[in-house]
Length: 132
Image (tube, rainbow, N blue to C red; front, side):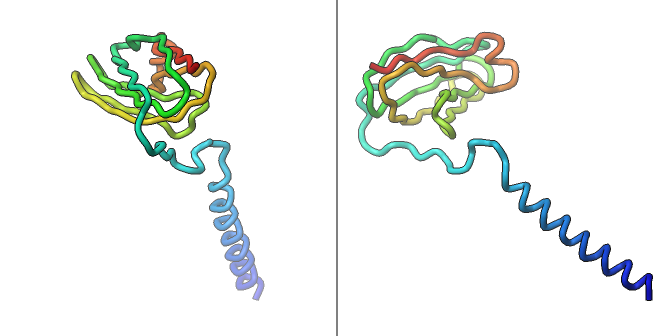
C-alpha cells in the first residue's frame, strides 16, 4: 500500500511541477509581449541608411516628428536595425545589396538606433536619430 501512495504522491507533485514550470515560462522580463504594429498612413519623410561591416551611413540623422519610413540597405554582411524605446521594430538585411523597409511613428526627441547582432553594436554599429 505504501508503494502505491508513494507513486501517487510523486505523480501529483510531478504534475504540479510541470504545470508550475509552464506558468513561470510565460512570465519573462522580455519586452516582447505584443508584436510591433507599423503605423498606417503615408510617411512624411524617408530615411535611407546603409549598413556596412560595423557601421551605419549616415550614423546621424534628423527628421520631423510623425510617421517616418526607414529604408535599410546592406552593402556587406548580415545586419539589423532596431531603435531603443521602440519595442519590436526591427529591419533585417543579409548579404550585399539587400533592402528592408519599415515605418515608425516618432515623437520629438533623440533616439539611438543600432545593430543588435552580438558584437556589432560594441564594434561601433549605432547611430542617433534626432526627431524635431
